[in-house]
Image (cartoon, rainbow, N blue to C red):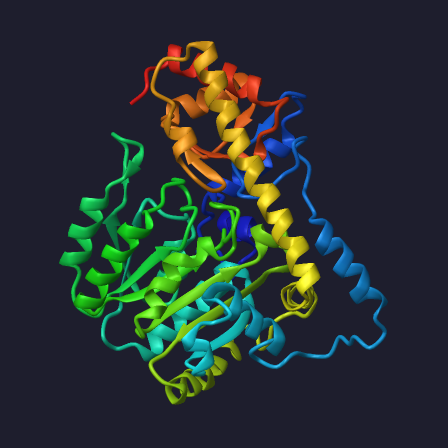
Length: 415
């Protein structure tokens, strides 16, 4: 009787409450912290130097144009989304001169940002790729990657990637693990600016990876969320993917516009599947529609319309490219500033990896105990693995972070 009164006799009474997703729990804790010194280095969003949300000027301008265009409508989109957006997204990642595009061997569908694109790709592979239902992903990888693929019923395995000893790439370990993977296995690769480590293969290393994967018959699935955030050049940062496409082989590519256009809450993304022939690509697209239809039927208009307007207009595209370069330059500047400040402070340890890492994140080398100490004593919020979002830093907050790291390292030894 007491149990019934507590749960009201609910048919869901057997459901257990699970802990919050750590990253989101950290966001809640940060929001409740009244300290004026609090610093959020956790969530992967690009911020201004003052830690405020950042909106690209070109996005703001295009949004005004769209709002004032009375010919725009709010009716349902096709299942695959805005055709122009899909076409220009493929060009952005594969290049305007891509033979795969010219030969109509690419099918692209608009999805719900990067996670949605990966999820649709995973569901498609689970239904239509009988060769192997195992996905190999880097150790470590983006925290949501295993969820997205396991939800589709695919098994998860890992390949070596990050070497804590060097704070760099365990390239030999990566090759050995891919060599040991069974033929036909799916391999998830991050195109550039690896999350969470900030460590990327070089182009010659990417070529070795390509050769090994093609010889083994492994299927590449690229996650591209940070195009332009490594070199500051959109074409340069797509080279890893273009290597794989140029050999005529097949691959999947998930794109996100959250970071590179600041369209986080608009959920703008695309999934491209590069096929052997135009006929196969057509068949693939027809099946992608059947995957999307029961999941969300069709995607939203607004964010993709902004992205399409920027991608197809030369002046707007150039303006966007300049803003991407400026964002990348700031990330590099913050890396150098943090490294210099740690050296000036005399903080024990070698911190050179901070300037060697690329993109939005760096693996600091701090252990969970030290991160917890920094949160408690200095109100600095970051994941327990020590990942720092460099875009969350500014000139005014670097000294506070350095004080915290120095105290953590001298009080609690590094692993």
